[in-house]
Length: 607
Ligand code: M6R
Image (cartoon, rainbow, N blue to C red; front, side):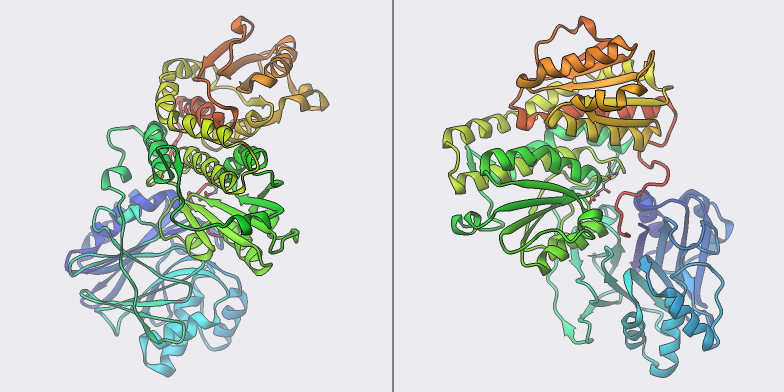
């Protein structure tokens, strides 16, 4: 969950590295460092804390080199400190390395190196890497071969950038299960953990598969497979524009991303549905194949998992296939019942979530077909899966996911309807009606955003609370789950969500005078039931906010937010929007860093 950046070209590397690190800071922000190739060899400057602390260091201004590597850290092994931050030298200071990932066998490697006379300065797993490279370099006298031999010994995940004093015009990069992209400019090359961080410099990218190596020089990139055979790679042009990776006048990325939703929803719809026709050019799924499927698993983490929950009913109701939604970190360890009759769908904004990728690999081993629903182009999951479909949310920078969620719910609904059309198990008219409703979603999302003033006022009345509860029935209970996650991650208020009917089986004991309870009511069939549950908490003194698209006598609630009506299977796309805004404004009222909440990183590339 760290971020790495690199530059090799003709400009001074330091400002480019700092700029890239600032954009990657969402991936980790407990310490940072850079190394540049100077006339008298590699120089490292590193510091505990945010990138600003690093940039404020006097010695960083003396770095003139035009080749460099940088790292922003989210501590796994070793507490946040200057000595544990990257880059790390080997003992002889011939090599400098930055690393994103975890070396699982580092104890063993450290012992081996100590037995061979090496000593260690930090508590990190990473420090074994430059020393191991050096160990092989003493025998091989070849930069690439030594890096390869060292990588052969590593177990775990890594994206590495490596500098060597004896090769002052080169850098080597390699990855295994951790993200790394290579951007090509004119006589310069940029490396990063993600595309947006270097999008202002280039739109042309190369993607490495696991254990492929790239040897970079200013004008050239040589690619090698794991046996060090030279390989060709195609450059891929990325359409995302630079403005989409900037704040663009908004105070925070999260607010900007919330407001981008009408457009990200429109783009996602436009990629698959037009003139009432669904087309998935990315893959062909035949009726014969779909008819063999007797179970669908949707697997993901966090918000992506909540997007899966929000669309489970569409798969079941329209495809008539039992559909289970599972948390990737649980799925991978519980020996799920999977065979060639199972279809597994994996959702991930970043496409780099370690648990989700591992869960995907497991399903492939057991003979199931896998579909990835990803946002980041070229990310690991898109290369691991049998089929891949992209949400078109554009870069999502804030740690709290907003526009990716709504795009995922849109895309999964379209995917379910596509399968339903192929399977012909429900009348075509039913599917057509939903398709028409999908086309209206961008306009309805805009209308929903119009409630901002009321949400801001409500945020102002509840931001000092210590507990907030969310309730809903059916699909609304899944929105409650997502709303609760959003609130806790950026406001640090303890929050829980419950299916409203569960309340009287325990949680109602927590309701007392002035406790805030937020209800979501969008399914006409469940209005009375949910209202009745909300009355139960009002009777016990709760202060209630209700988000609804139904006609309800709202005098009984402390506050009601009305949103446009839509078919229940699409309602999460709209009902979550006021609750994203609520979490945002509560966090602002508390004076917190909305985009970079404590202890969290945007992509969780470690287990
Ligand atoms: O990149 P992914 O969609 O795989 O990420 C999954 C979760 O880590 C992510 O949704 C997380 O829960 C967000 N911080 C929620 O806002």
